[in-house]
Amino acid sequence: MSATRTAATGTVYLVGAGPGAPDLLTLRAARLLAEADVVFHDALVHPDTIALAVRAEKFAVGKRCGRHSTAQRFINKRLVDAAATHRVVVRLKGGDPLLFGRAQEEIEALEAAGIRYEVVPGITAALASAAATGTSLSQRGTVRSIALATPRVGEGERASDWARGFASADAGAIYMGLGEGAAIAAALRAVGKPPTLPVAIVENASLPAERVVYTTLAGLAQVDSEQFSGPALLLIGPQFADRRVVAVDARESELTPKVGHG
Amino acid sequence: MSATRTAATGTVYLVGAGPGAPDLLTLRAARLLAEADVVFHDALVHPDTIALAVRAEKFAVGKRCGRHSTAQRFINKRLVDAAATHRVVVRLKGGDPLLFGRAQEEIEALEAAGIRYEVVPGITAALASAAATGTSLSQRGTVRSIALATPRVGEGERASDWARGFASADAGAIYMGLGEGAAIAAALRAVGKPPTLPVAIVENASLPAERVVYTTLAGLAQVDSEQFSGPALLLIGPQFADRRVVAVDARESELTPKVGHG
Image 1 (cartoon, rainbow over the protein chains, first blue to last red):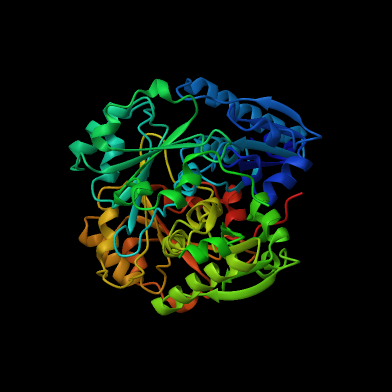
Image 2 (cartoon, helix red, strand yellow; image 1 turned 90 degrees about the vertical axis):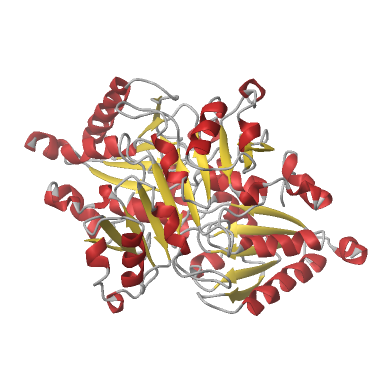
């Protein structure tokens, strides 16, 4: 252990790459990528973001959904090893590292090896998805608590455990849930949510192919996931009713790819 | 109304300024500020962030906690008026616009006036605060649902409504709760949380004066809010026990101001 501590010369930055659009990266993340000696990035990070690491050796290490935990231990080891020989090591993760990103396992490995680290937060998909709908997650007077969860099941987890957190929350966001619409709807019905509860399915949030589909919990059970090709997030709550019926003109821009700003 | 539609030449960008540190702004937000003709910003946004708007007229319009809703209507009107005569109007809000930011009222005013708008998400305080603790909000196998809430009471809201959302969630973040420690602890006890539940109080997340104080729900009721001068966020969950007892060396950097990276 003491040998490892002496050998460690670098810092590992666990960096959030944000929801997809390269310009939703933070200034700090962009600077760290430019300075990085080595970058280990998730598979889904935008190529333009990875390209900011002009000096770095770059390795795709992650982890689409459902990979085995051996892969995680392998990533942990590579981070520890890289810090022994490199000054700036960036572990680039989609969204925010500390929300459904399995960063804790990497942090614990770094702590165990005595390696300095820092977490750089990123824009999480729930907020980019809410932006796509033009609808606030919180709503003054009606939506005061918001639940975040994923139905993605890891070792030792039961399939419906995640839904507990929605039982008493006023609204919520479900990460990585598409393809399990029927199971999600059933789990939320089981904790007391009505079939009429509005649901916004946000696909490819922040990207040119961004798309919002409005439905209800009853409708979610019927959704054909083959209609969606990109990552999707579910926003659930009374405020996510389709507002086009009351303000068609003003809402159209939310339902088609955004025009460029500026 | 049709006159207003014809007059509207600009776009209003509802932009998240992030948690405090100027370099936790997004690249998109930085570009929009540089292009902005006029900026309406919250009082708590960092001066270095506002300074990025080199061309713009700048107005502080908000809204420390507890201001009257008349002020909100005044902000709405100023945004609508500004879009009639300016091309790029930025409404710059602390954190993310769609999480406890009252953006919905501004969006509805813009929609009613037929004005084009876009939401640019920002890093929310809960994620910057989690980064300060080096502890993931989600924890594989144990923390699968996270509640976000604020005890801040608006018109027509009951003081303890917010706590409902925590009843069944595995962990959570409470915004703008400091100074109400006893009431928060009581509300969480009332929905079934144990007095031993770990709490991390994160003050000035992401800023040089960042500080983390670890306590429990029982301890939170006793906290002297006079000890805290900056904005603070409460992280609540089993993972927020003080980890210094098991890994003192590695955790020290989280408890003192961060050293610069790079």
